[in-house]
Length: 262
Image (cartoon, rainbow, N blue to C red; front, side, top):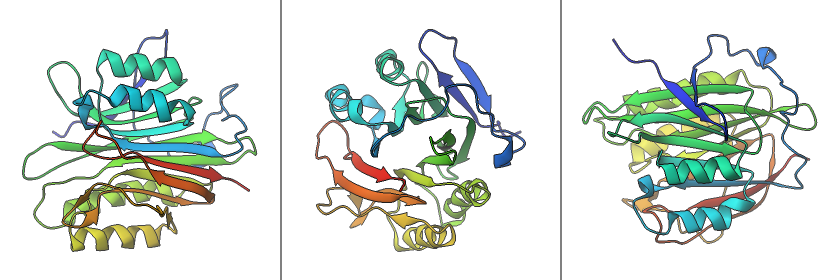
């Protein structure tokens, strides 16, 4: 029997909370606890980064540098070491991770750090058919000051597969949630889009979901076979600024973007 996907929520000073995908994903059912709205930011600053399981020495200095100014951080291959959890819970109100790779002590998967608690959390994972290793995605929703809801999708796409069926299936599961959401959407992560077939599937998905792609004037993104692997997509917002930070702290370079909601 296939294991059900779940997320773990980390909040400073509180026990860890296990969150399963909700049975009812109707946006009208989003619960709005007191104080849950994102603060009024002049621009919403987002960091998207495959952190390579924190295997390189300078990952923490990068997070302390660009991460401290980011209102939302979307990490892929985030391993729940004490150092990362300590950083995350100290600098961010709420942290959710979907365990995908189960290492003996600290599982690895996508992790989203935010300036307020999510009012909707939907963990997803898909198993790679060749290596039987899982890749994860996390959908969270945050109330905006103007009353709308911001949906954030953090994804690490399946990598090793014969054909594109499983790749398309993983994106389709995200699309099911995205289609019923009425507010702004931001989607980022490592899409493992290293082939022409995968790029075609990805751009068909983006077109069907009415998403726009963030463009980087100086594009230093990690590539494979000449194709970029990391992306940020959006709708219902305006992009104000975007750049790629060159670093040796991971095998991927962080993506930075600023959005406005006017």
